[in-house]
Image 1 (tube, rainbow, N blue to C red):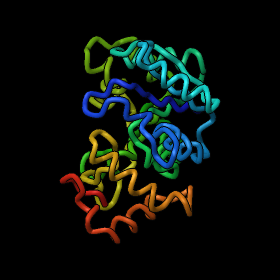
Image 2: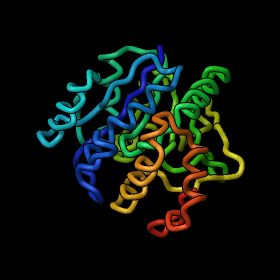
Image 3: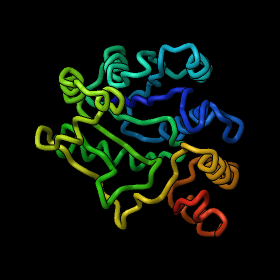
Image 4: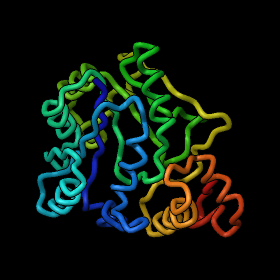
Length: 238
């Protein structure tokens, strides 16, 4: 059983409410889930948001779409993940964040496959020097590793970043990495700022109406055809 947990909150400091901002007439998080749902290796997806009143809107939006929601601590995201895992038991957990509306389902499947084939505790597709674009990040771990890391966690970083101890202490865990050649770690497809949102909206407006399942290669080809977008906001976009 492979459970994807998509963490989301309204209280982003740089772009508050971004997860519900519209992309092609739907909240951004809904468009992301639409892409994630094309990953064949995920058995179930749950959105993990906080129990704060401002995140009632996320729960309402997810309920309208028939998507499972778990609510827990805003600050201790790690315990929120454990709560979601308790509510939806699984053997492996895929960690996703709700600021990635250009998520790549083929990368999600490849990262899961690597974790399973290696028998790893933890796998990511962002190894230093060979990372995939920001905004296509995937982390996969065994439920047992996540539970053990949470039980042993003592730092604010571990509580906030969920997998902090897993990738910061590779000597304690069986870790593996899905590399990208050439390195795409400088490419920015995540949504953290207004210019990120404008970039992603432009991609969707160009590609989505004719191909709802557009790929990462489609995004690269589109950006290559638009010099005005190639370094939009001061970051590399393809």
